[in-house]
Structures are given as C-alpha cells and as structure tokens.
Length: 214
Image (cartoon, rainbow, N blue to C red; front, side, top):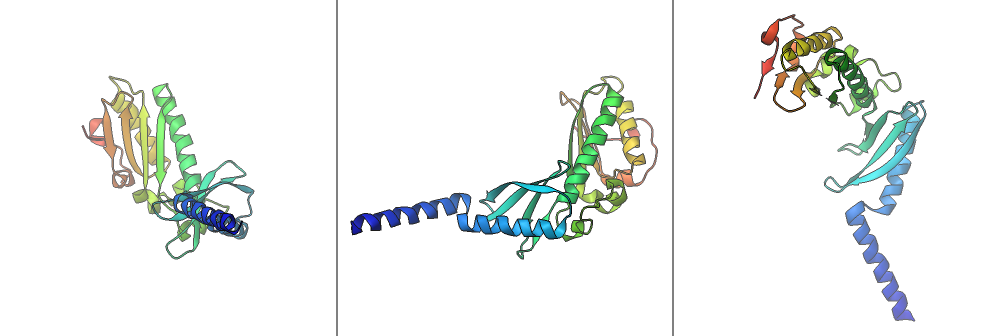
C-alpha cells in the first residue's frame, strides 16, 4: 500500500515537471493571471476580459491575451524587471490604421486589399494614455520609425503608380507616418517608401514619389 502511494506521488511529481516545462508551472500560471487582473484593474477603467493565458516557452514567461469592451485585442506580459506592461495603445493604433487604409485602398482600386500594420510600442511610454488613446496621427512623428504599413492589393496593370501615389498622398495628409510598402496580389509589383520620406510631406509626381524594389 505504501509503495503504491509512493509510486503515485512520483508519477504526480513527474507529470507536474513535464507540464511545467512544456506549458509553464500551473501555480505560476494562476499567480500570473491574478497579477494581470490586479494590473488591469489599476491601469484601466474600461471593460475587459482575459481571453487566455499562454506560455512562451522560448522566453520562459506567460502572456495574457485580453479583449477590451470595444473588441480591441491586446497583450499583457512582464518586462525584464518583472513589471507588467501591455500593448493596448499599439493595438488601438493598429486597428485604426488597418481599417482606414483598407477603406482608402478599396476606394482607389475598387477592390478589397490585405493591409498589414505593425506598431511596435509596448512599454511604459504607451501606458501614459491609459483608456484615452489618441489618434495615431497625433503620435506618428514619434512612432513612425517603429511602424509599418503593408498594402497588398489588386492594383491596375497600367495605372498602378497613380493609384499608389493617391494612397501615399492620402496617408501623408492623414499624418499616418510609417514605412509604407505596396505589393500587387500576384507579386509582380513591389514599392517601398521609408518613413522618413513620408515625413517630408512633399507632393511628387509619377514614379519619382515611389522607391521601387524588385
């Protein structure tokens, strides 16, 4: 009877070790979830819910996937010093840019486009906004070097330069400064515009306003 009890304990310990290695310590997972809940209560007044808590095996840490009351998905994790941080502001900006650029591209080309936006701003600076995140245009000069917009659309075979120029000028006017990339759906057209070029805010004509890469 004693041997069976000892064997059972050994099996439980081994199972716990295996689970901890592959998906993180269950105890630490619960503790992290509790810390995230406390952090969100202190940081935001908006409605939110923790959708899931995932384990980053490579970096040996947990990451919480959170959804705001407005449907914005964002991440909460610990930094190198064990302090909580989130990318709520960055997620708001990504959603804003994606929706606006997608609509503009469809207006110009007459068809749907795939727009991929990245705004890498996850840390204490972004937390100063709390629930009141400003439009990306208000912070674009500061974040443009960390932001990118990639537009993959059904551009005209003969008028693609004019279409891309119109979208580019609209982005400049909206102050959506970021590195900008255009791609055709079949991959035959590729143009890249560094964020610094958008900052110049100069109206150019024809292919001179676009930097081509093949």
